[in-house]
Image 1 (cartoon, rainbow, N blue to C red):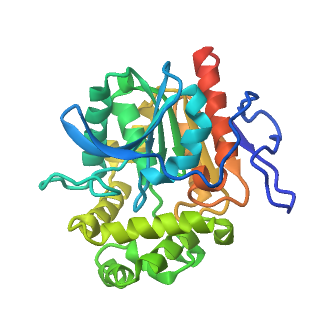
Image 2 (cartoon, rainbow, N blue to C red; image 1 turned 45 degrees about the vertical axis):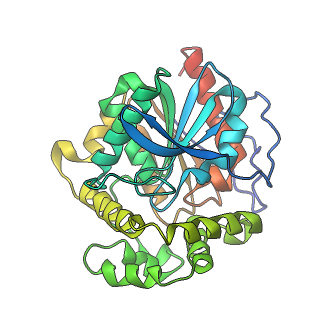
Length: 334
């Protein structure tokens, strides 16, 4: 099922009613606090895997695990985790090499490796099947876990997942360097140039790339992101994690046969929600319909004037859609 929240030309409020049957919940959500700081974080070990995580205390009868995208971190889920806290405990992870998670020396940063580590961590939590929520690279990782370890996944939400797209359009990017940086071999020079940016400039480039309206990104959030980039300067593994994870995505994109994400996705049996922004400059919304269609129980919500990180740009709309699915899963009505 595909639904689009209408675009009237005015800024789209998160509470906008759907055109037809978008599974938005009618249950009241907590009031969104735009000044909410990131949730406290700490390194936790589960299933033999150590990751830095941020926990959002909530309802004890369900657990949601949030997985960030390439170059992101657990702070990408501050608002969405808060909105969904009354309905599930939230665990936002820093994937190996990102945020504050130090990777093992031999970690290869492939999507398979990320998925394997996260699956072991989730299993080690001992919380039963979880609601798995992933964005971009994290969406692809979450999809791999749902396909290969269905016993761990109660529901799957993927927000602009990094599905194979062999025809990316660099003209849509806000900075040509960003386009080049994602390309194998010739992207090395562009990545070195990006690495020379100061923390504030790097944070601004990320927001320009990922938000449909970068000017709407709150100043205090930009300061938080700048501080995070500053902290990562001293982490010897940070640049390697970014470069090799980028190459890992490209290797997956050009995989054929059973190794392709398009071949793996139909194996996902969990109730699945696909969320995409019409102004996504990273993974085109043209992937959205096919992604929802190949999932066994997939539904699609498309948000207008929204970029690559809908959970940050339209957190209330995303929360209503996610909660709508959770409620229908509980009622066996998805």
